Length: 293
Image (cartoon, rainbow, N blue to C red; front, side):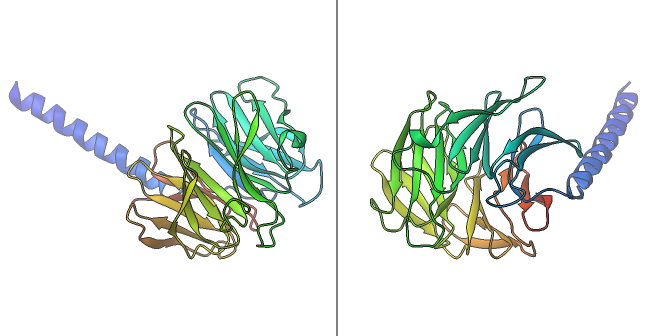
């Protein structure tokens, strides 16, 4: 009886190991999704589907769209957008930073439509270049306006949007001159701390949302674009200009983990926390980047 049980257990262990190896091997060799139209941002829903914003032609209104990737198969969720960039999902709602406004889409609807959640007129100052989005556990949105992208802090700002769509200024270049072209955002679940990477200075900041104190965490990220954080408090930052992805340890140590992209844009963390999804904007592809061997 003991030997039979042991034999069955051994077989199960072998099968589990083979299965785990196969899944791991697949996860580490996922082919890129090709043929995307200037992909800028990506986010993964709880059901595993990936949503990618496709700008298509910069400054061309109406030719942007959101693409859905489900087990390698692609389809279009909504069309007729302007320059869609940052994406975030809260519940069943996909929020989109689209040039000067924030749109929302119920992704569970059989025929999803994009509706205006926050128009340009709702902002304290007319947005110039709405870029990234983040959301806390309470459903509050955080959105960056990269301003005129000239690096002088003209229009660069970060805003808070509550669940009712009311907008308030968090920080801008007038409050702190280090705020030039804020781009990538990451907020903790409690809504106490916001990480901001600046496209102009290449500096990663941490903002205490209670006292609005801005702290420099790390630098050297070129055209800082996307930022995410894993459960172990490691941050990952993409450099659009340099085509690179970096890690930043909890102590602030920076390490290059991948280079060679044409324009690594707004990255996203996979649901299992083991991979990054990297839109390579100029190459028109989405790459799955393993974080662990």
